[in-house]
Amino acid sequence: MRSSMKTRTLGKTGPTVSALGLGAMGMSDFYGPADREESIATLNAALDEGITLIDTGDFYGSGHNEILVGEVLRGRRREDVVVSVKFGALRDPQGNFTGVDLRPVAIRNFLAYSLKRLNTDHIDVYRPARMPPGTDIEEVMRTLADLVKAGYIRHIGLSEAGADTIRRAHATHPIVDLQIEYSLISRGIESEILPTCRELGIGITAYGVLSRGLLSGHWARDRRLAPTDFRSRSPRFSRENLDRNLDLVDALRTVADAKGATVAQTAIAWVLSRGEDIVPLIGARTRERLDEALGALGVELSAGDVEAIERAVPADGAVGDRYPEAQMAHLDSER
Ligand SMILES: NC(=O)c1ccc[n+]([C@@H]2O[C@H](COP(=O)([O-])OP(=O)(O)OC[C@H]3O[C@@H](n4cnc5c(N)ncnc54)[C@H](OP(=O)(O)O)[C@@H]3O)[C@@H](O)[C@H]2O)c1
Image 1 (tube, rainbow, N blue to C red):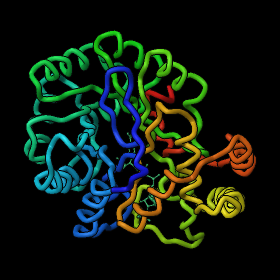
Image 2 (cartoon, rainbow, N blue to C red):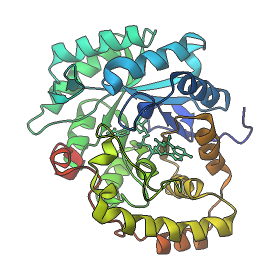
Image 3 (cartoon, rainbow, N blue to C red):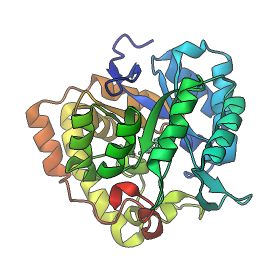
């Protein structure tokens, strides 16, 4: 295990986890084909290196992702891993997203299947992935609170929630963390959502820290994407916007080079430096990428470094929204 593994605590009442979490999504979905053996090796390597937080969703690969994580959990002491699961999204057999179901009976059904796929009797942090307009968040929270009481879930989290929903949910049952996109080029949470979480003592598990690979330093300008790849529809990767966004990455590379770090490490280190209440979720799908990401833990940023990074990649520097228009409309955090 890396002796340098640092820890952070999720919210006032949540578990203490490694300062970096691993998101398993790309091992089953959204980013093109992934290698099963390498995915399992990456999950195991992450745990061996001291990562204790693994994030998944029951709809990632329509259950495939939980089965992968479950396979890895089988060989581990359950109490050594904090498993975070998103639920609520519905898919058809072709993988199309067909809606969100947050009825109490649906939540109990989702949970029953997740527990089986994950080979476990409890989930550490359970959270609705999306909350469509009109969601009765108090009812969702009461259902989840019953599941906490019954011992099936340990903690409740949220995903892409706005300040009002966060307050309403937290007033019904403590929320330990909000999972939300946060990176050098997705800084929307800084105005209202992050201050609200800080006021209430709710942690942040940040995703999209590398903006889905765009900020990784490995993105080739001429990379071809399968139509099923999320990024083939993402405005930030569109033909009109990609070149300008990659110019920001070139500017970041100059700062990273001066620090003796890679672009990805610098982007992750910047998120880590935003506060002890923030845990970046990294989307590594291979041991090589994982190793690079873990290196971010050793990158100390001075105030001058942060200034240089933010000069290279200004808060509003990127062009294009972080999701396609139709999906932006589903984000409670953007309402
Ligand atoms: N709550 C939500 O709505 C939500 C939404 C999306 C994701 N998430 C969670 O967040 C996790 C992270 O996913 P993300 O898309 O946000 O991840 P990300 O870190 O922004 O991007 C991951 C992609 O970056 C590329 N990459 C290049 N160098 C890397 C490195 N050193 N380390 C890691 N990745 C590198 C990888 O592509 P290659 O493998 O091709 O190099 C990978 O597919 C997901 O697994 C999921 O658990 C949550």
